[in-house]
Image 1 (cartoon, one colour):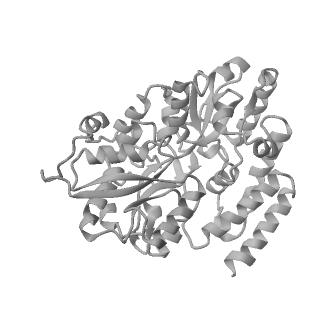
Image 2 (image 1 turned 90 degrees about the horizontal axis):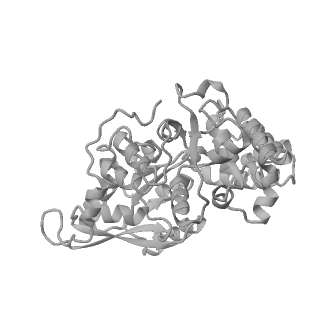
Image 3 (image 1 turned 180 degrees about the horizontal axis):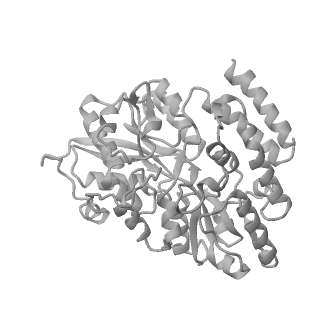
Amino acid sequence: MRRFPLMMATAAVTFALALSSCGGGESSGDGSEATGTLTLAGWSLASTPEFQTLADAFNATDPKYKVEVKEYQDGNNYDTQMVADLAAGTAPDIYVQKNLKNFYTYQDGEQLLDVSDVATELSDETGGLDAYEVDGKTWAIPYRQDAWVIFYNKDLFAKAGVAEPDGTWTWDDYVTAAEQLTAALGADGAQGAYQHSWQSVVQGFALAQTPGADLLSGDFSYLTPYYERSLALADAGAMPDYGTVTTNKLTYQAQFGKQKAALLPMGTWYIATLIAQQASGDADAFEWGIAPAPQYDESTTGTDNVPVTFADPTGLGINPALDEDKVQTAKDFLAFAAGPDGAKAMAGIGITPALTSDDVVDTFFATDGAPTDELSKFAFSTHEVKPENPVSEHTAAIQNLLNETHSAILSKSVTVDEGIADAEQRAQDEVLNK
């Protein structure tokens, strides 16, 4: 299905208008002064502006309670710290579900307020909303929905004389292009592709695109061709091998931003980073674009079809310990973040919102430094996004053991067949039949 119909109209207040009234909100929505604050969890605030952007835009609507951002640690430390704060009664009023991997832990642990009434008022075009539904109730609201795509360096493609992606690529086409680029650019120190060390880069695509693949089945044979292809690319010198990436602590931002790789599979969140780093000089100045992720087979390639990719939504939940008087304002904030005003605020800083419309797409691609070609707009706006972490009580445990499998296979401690067979046995013994 086409997730973001480009013809859909949106009655949105522009982000510029929202920001224009920032800082002056001493009164609440009914004209009286704000009576207090709501706290919102965020992380890496200096380099991750989305939390403050949403808070500022919402506060400009003069809510009864102003939203203030509380900084947490990034990465896996976020969930560790949040779980501890919830247990201690010191967690913020509104907190972020970074992905779906730990959503079950929060929901089953009764650490989320029922926000079904917010969900029922949202547009049907809000991406990722279904992921937060358990037993007929909704426990978090998505405000962004990224998708994995291919970033490519147009200047390096032109220099190598290799045809740019056109939306018709399968993974075989990606491999061919990476090898051709490496052959043409190797003397200048560039490689055709860079795949970061995360298990998502291999396993996320395999789970989303392979017909019949099911993370919770305990059958991981769908991973085989994706690992064989990654190992072959590294063996051919068309991308750094896993040992080089991890030992040298390579970053995808430096490998692509400094033009050491012409192709980069990555989530759309990197668009905002790349724009900012090119503006600051942390990344080289070059022309780039995004294309749909290479596909499992030709049935989903081409701009007449809908490419399949993956990513978890990013959502907002409410701490059930919140004072009753503040609950409605907290729900208003969730509705704002997931609605057209929040979507335009996110698009205005290069973040992919959960709700996308013509206005949002126009706002996103009007950002200075963003690509302007039609394929980039297609890749941004048209795809079927499947969750990387299907919600269940077993998801986190299976993903943790598959992460170990990922390292073992790519470091060649085991063969692909050995690694997958071991993961399947462990899934049965340690998770599914426990």
